[in-house]
Every structure is written in structure tokens, then in C-alpha cells.
Image 1 (tube, rainbow, N blue to C red):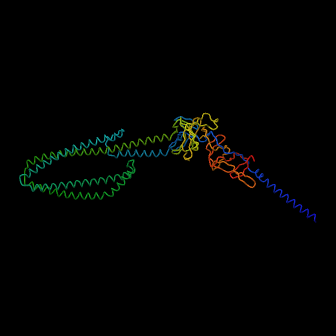
Image 2 (cartoon, one colour; image 1 turned 90 degrees about the vertical axis):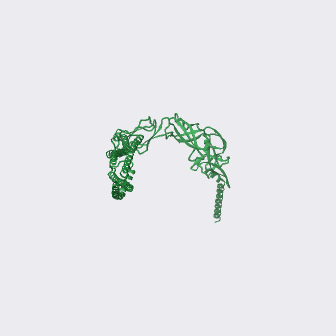
Image 3 (spheres, rainbow, N blue to C red; image 1 turned 90 degrees about the horizontal axis):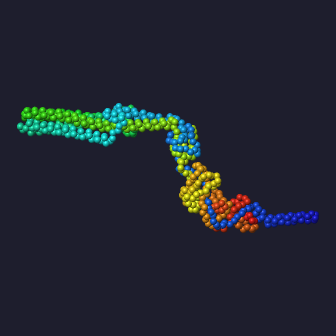
Length: 561
């Protein structure tokens, strides 16, 4: 029993010794074990120095002055006569369009028919002279100056004839006065003469009122009939004119007149009837006064001679009044002719215009070809055979002959300061291209970030096409920088460019090394190193390579440990 207890105690003691030994070994070698599980990194301190910077960028080749081929009609493309990259001269066929009867043609034909009908209706129903008709038919057009001269001439004739009428009327009035004197001069006929004079004045005034009332009545009646006629013509569709709103407004006015004029016509008619009765009674008064005056004197011989002379002048007066009336009618007709000729010529011009437009539409609808508007290269085609064109839709884009190409990309303001307009740029992988030459054309603020970026625009000549992607490098000035790192130290993610710096932290088991992120801006670079700026002191130990991917905050081990 004692031997068994002794053996058990020995075994427990040995187990405890082994356990403590293992724990001691693990404690002393845990740092080494962990280090071998960490990414091994190579690092170097940030340095200062110079960099011969080449600013690089990639952009899309664009046409310097593209020309878009567009047609305004909606048509179906029968065939495409060119392909992208073809060189054409002005007038070459680009697209063949299918023949079609365009709805626009039908509408234009209807518009032409209406215009012709309105023109013919105006001729047949209008009160125009044969000279106007002949002038319109021959295509003549009287000038405004000629119209004005004709109206002035007509006014001069009216004025001269009115003067003749006034002169004869003055003679008749003088003879009338002489006859009155002879008839009533010997006896005291002052009372009778005064009564006759008053009666005649009253008669003449009332007769003038009657004449004015008749004219008013006739004018209202004429206006009513014209309104009635216009309404019938408008409702029948025979009224011509281009301004539909104006024609409708005249129609509404005519209907209004039919409602208001009847009452005015009745009032005018009643006034005419009343005045006719008054004039009749005043005429009786004049005759009675004349009889009273005649009874007091008798100079029949002289009076008869004067009355014969008066009759002669009255015949002359009627003739001159007739001539005056003819002149006034001629002036009225002249004004109508002028208005008619202007209207007919306008309608005829409209017909000619519609005929030309219709002919042009028909020419486009049959055998239509879309021709190259300029000489140059077809850079893109936006439509295929069988597709329908849309109004103002681009069918193809051309690079006009003699016009160059451009390419643009953005750089920082610091990079832009090292460049100047006119500098030649190099193509990345230049061996792939034959005769391409690139020159910096402008340096302008980038509209996406004008405060910190510039947009570089290059002129390109040679064998390029719009849409081609090219990578460029430009600039060759050496500059000194305070912080330079190898290009392999520059990393980038969605938040921008950064470097990982090795920072040391003390622990009970020794120093630990942590990768810490610092955001930076790359201000210059060449093929091996880059100049950076950021929240750095300039003596940081920057990770350049690693055996495993390294993230910020991760423990690492240095390659010499």
C-alpha cells in the first residue's frame, strides 16, 4: 500500500513539473510564435529629394467640331449607304429613304384647295373692275405710291366739280333774290316777305332733318342686310381669309347687329314718317306765304326772264351734280379696287407659296436621299435600315474635313502649375500608334471641382477616331519635395489614396508593430517614386511591401525580425 501511494505521488509531481515546464516554454516563446503568424512587411523612412514628374491621364477622343446629320421629317430608312469611318464628300448619299405618301402632303393639298376656292369666290362675288382682274391675272402688283396717287387724283376731281356746283348754286341763289325783290319790291311786302322767308327757312331746316333721317334709315337698313349676308356666307363656309380669329369676330359682330339693329331701324322709320308729315305741312305754309306775297306785286315780265335764266342754271346745276356724283362713285370704286387687288394678290401669293411647299413635300416623299452636308469622316451612325426617323433625330455624326480631335482629363492645381499651353504630350504605349501628335491646348478650371482641379484639353492629329480611349503623359520639369515614398507604398480605396506607417507599441512581452493609415495626396510621381502631402511629420516608417495583405490597425512584423 505504501509503495502504491508513493508511486501515485511521484506521478502527480512529474505531471506538475511537465505542465509548468510547458507553460514556461510557451511564455518565453509566445512572442516568437505570434510573430511568425503575422504579415512580414518591408518598410523605409520617408525621404526628401527631387522628382521629374510626368502627369498622366486617360481620356476619350472627341470630335473638335462634330456635325450632326438631321432631317425634320418622320421617314423610314430604306438603306444606309455608308459605315462608320467612311470618308465622304459633300453631296454623297448617306441614307436612302422609302417612298411614302406623307400625311403632311394630304393636309397641304387640302389647304391649297381651300385657298384656290377662296380666291375664285372672291373674284366671282367681289365688286371689282376689269382692270383689277387683268392686273391680278397678269401677276402685276400696283405699288402703294401708285394707289395713293390715284386716290389723290380722284379727290382733286371731286374738289373741282364740287366747286362748280357751289358756283352755280350761288348764281341760282342770286337770281332767286332778284325775283323776290321784283315781286315784292314796289308794295310794302316786308311782312309777307318776312313770313315767306321764315316759312322757307323752317321748311329747308325740316327738309334737311328729313334727308338726314332718311340717310340714317337707309344706312341702318344697309348695315342690317350686310350683316345678314355675311352670316349666311360665313355659315355656308364661303367667307375667305387667313385670319380665322378675325373672321369669327366679324361673324359674332354681325349676329350682334341682327339683334340690335331692328329696334334702331324702326325708330329711324318712325322719325322719317313724322318728319315727312312736318315737311308737308311746312311746304303748305311756304305756298301760302308765297301766295300772300304774290298778291301784292306783279313784275311778271322781268320775273319770267329771271325765271328762265334760273331754270337754265338749275339744269346746269343738275348736270354738275351728276358729274360730282360720278366722281364720288369713281373714288369709292377706286378704293374698293385697291382693297380687292391687295386681297387678291395676297391670296394669289399664298396659293403660289402653297404650291411650292406641296411640290417640295412631294419631292421629299419620293426617291428621297439624305446627302452629306459637308465633306469629312462618318464618326457614328445612329440608325439602321428599316428604322423610322424622328423629328430632329440625329441620323449620323460627321467629323468635318480639316477639323481636329480633342481629349480632356482633370489634374490637381499643383500639377497644372507645372504645365504650359503648347507643350507636347506623349502617348502611353506609343509603339501602338503611327502618326498621332498631341499638344496641350488649354488649362481651365474643372467645373466639377473648380477650387482644386484643372481640366487639361489636348489637340490631337493623326489616325484617331471619335470614341477612342488614349492615355497620355505630359510634363518634364524636376521639382524638390519634402516627402517622397516608393510608388509601392501608395495604396488606394474608395476613400482615396493612403499609406500604411509602422508604429511601435510596448507590451509585457516586448514591442509590437501596428500598421497605421495616413491619407495622402500624390502631387508628383515618376516611374519609381511619388511625392506626397498629408498629416505627416516626414520621418515616418512607411510599409512598401508585405508577404500578406495588410489592413490599418493590423499587427505586423518587420522583415529583419
